[in-house]
Picture 1 (tube, rainbow, N blue to C red):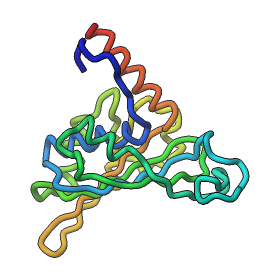
Picture 2 (cartoon, rainbow, N blue to C red):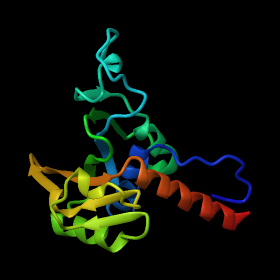
Picture 3 (tube, one colour):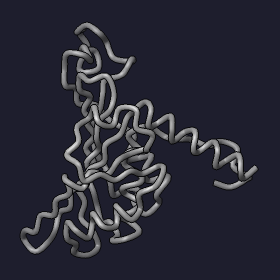
Picture 4 (cartoon, rainbow, N blue to C red):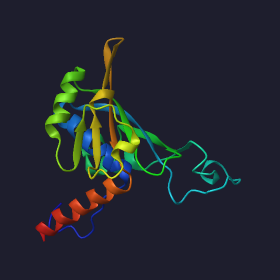
Length: 192
């Protein structure tokens, strides 16, 4: 951000959950391509009762509902290196708040689980948490991080002469997102 910026955006909770993890992977290892998959709480915009009209009309508190997401497109705006090379979807599930985002990626070089986890741990800060505990969604409810990297879920698949890397970050789609918005406003206020 710069003082000349007139409009700023905090994007979405899923973008916040994905962006920090992705930026670290880009800076440390480079990303050739990726597929993100989010699993998060249903929202107030969803119906409370099933209705006709497709998935968007189904009851949020009663169903697991695959939906489209703008997170991958927004990600390309904040991290230009991944524009057009990451796509994905989100699934809304019947929990009140919190969820996680997975990124399946092909990196520019071969890595190990330990290498991934080490750089994620080193990058931890007020916006980006790190855990080696086997957490679940309720463990991040009220967490102020934009996302919390889960080292226990990192995987590296070596097959057919290449690697596929899976990384996961949890987030509170309400409290964590608002906390990140506050950090953005505080940062912007120092620029003007």
